[in-house]
Image (cartoon, rainbow, N blue to C red; front, side):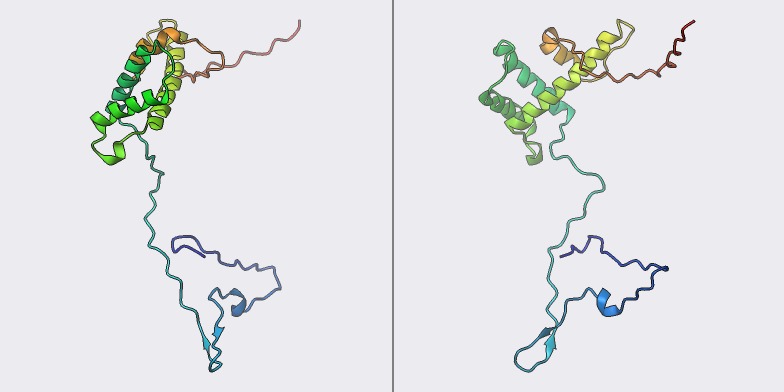
Length: 186
């Protein structure tokens, strides 16, 4: 069954081939059915397909967070995080965080957040924070300041517990220098 907007396959003829096909072999219409009463043939009715929604050219993320909602999330999470002496939040705490975010930003249904969405967003923010923190530390005071809007608030909340990891890959913004020349024995 093909959807009206899906591509159809068309046979490609090969000029080097000696095989010929007749129209009945390439016809994609359904075969006629025999009617038991008078021997006449009937063609089955075409199957109706549901109307298709136009597909956007780029996929749309349903859980896209606005910057102000992310600030509210960080504040609500940070409050619980500090109350729990910087330990992990349990599900009931995440629900409280989601309720706080929804109280400020959930007036539109598509912007309502679940506890799981809030936890996933915080986990993503922590990962981004670690990358930014590594960049700041790597700069050794060379005037690199993070332009990421959530860096300084997250630094205040989790910066003291941040441990640089050798597995963190820090993409460099500077152009790489030429590779060193191989050393040859004298």
